Image 1 (tube, rainbow, N blue to C red):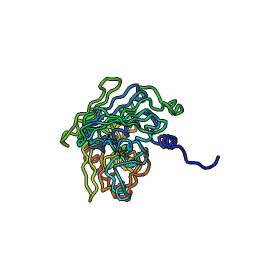
Image 2 (cartoon, helix red, strand yellow):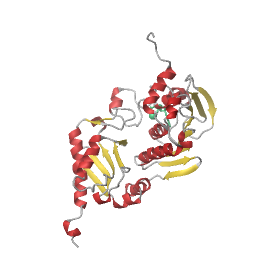
Image 3 (cartoon, rainbow, N blue to C red):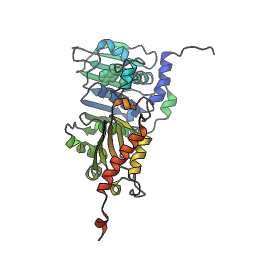
Image 4 (tube, rainbow, N blue to C red):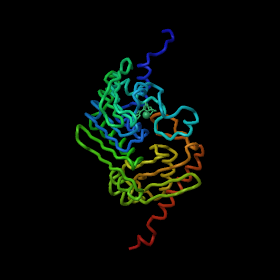
Length: 341
Ligand code: ADP
Ligand code: MG
C-alpha cells in the first residue's frame, strides 16, 4: 500500500482506542469538561450500564454557537494555546481529543447555551463522516452531552464490555473519585432513571468529612486521622486511617495531585512506607490525600488515561509525603501503656 493520510474518522477512532476504553472513560472525560467549564451542578444519566446512553448535563459557561462544531474536532481546545499554558496547566483537559474521540465511536449530541447568547444550539455526529449538523435547541445556560450506542461502529470494542452492572460500577467509581476532588460541586448520578448517588455541595472545609463519609463510608470518616502538613510551596492534607482501622480492600486509596486523582507509584510507595511495621497483614493502606504544589513542579502530560505524574523533585516529594503521613500515624498509634490490661 502506498503511504496515504488516514481518513479523519479513522484517525479519531484510533485515538479513541487509547482513551475511551469503556463507558466509565466517557463519563470521566465529560464530567471533567463540566468542571473545566465552571459548573456547580452536574447530572449524569446512565442507561444500561452506559452502553445505551451516557448523558451529562452541567450549568457551566456553555459553548458559543460558532464554536460548537469546533468542539467536536480533534486537537481543538479552549484551554491552552501555547507551551507556556501547558506547563502551567490548571484545567483537567487540554488535549482537545475527548469529544472528537467519543463522537467517532458513538452517536453524540452536544447542546449548549452561554450567558451572552439567548438561544441554545445543538450539533450532532454519528461516528462516520464527522460533519457536524447545527440546529437550534432549547437548553438553559450550560451544556449537555448525550452519548448513545457507544462502540456501535467498533464491534471489537463492544465485545469487551462487561455486564451493565460491572460497567455501572466503573462509572460509580469514576464519579466517586471526582466527587472527592470537588467538594464544592453538586453531583447526581442516575441509572435507568433511578437516582443512585447524590453528592450535595459542601462549601466549608470543616464539613468535607460529610462527603468523605458518603464516598468512602462512615467507618473511614469516623476513624481517619486528619493530615495537614506544609513545606515551602508544597502542602499535603486529607485523611489517613490508623493501621488498625485500615481496610481489607484497596478501595479507599485516593491520592490527588493538584486536584487530579493519581495512581502514582511514588506516592503509593511513600504512604505504604509510612505504615511499615504497623499495618496488619490482611490490611491495606487506607487514605484520601491531597498534594498541592506549584504546577511548574509537576508534569501531568505523561499519558492521557494513565494516572501518572512526573515530579521535578521526585525524591523530595516522596519524603515529604512519607514524613507527613508517618508523623500523624505515629502520633496516633496506641502507646504501649494503652495495651496493658
Ligand atoms: P479538552 O477538554 O482537552 O479541551 P474536549 O474534546 O474534551 O477537549 O473538549 C473540547 C472543547 O469543547 C473544550 O476545550 C471546551 O472548549 C469545549 N467543551 C467541552 N465540554 C464542555 C462543557 N461541558 N462546557 C463548556 N465547554 C465544553
Ligand atoms: Mg476534555
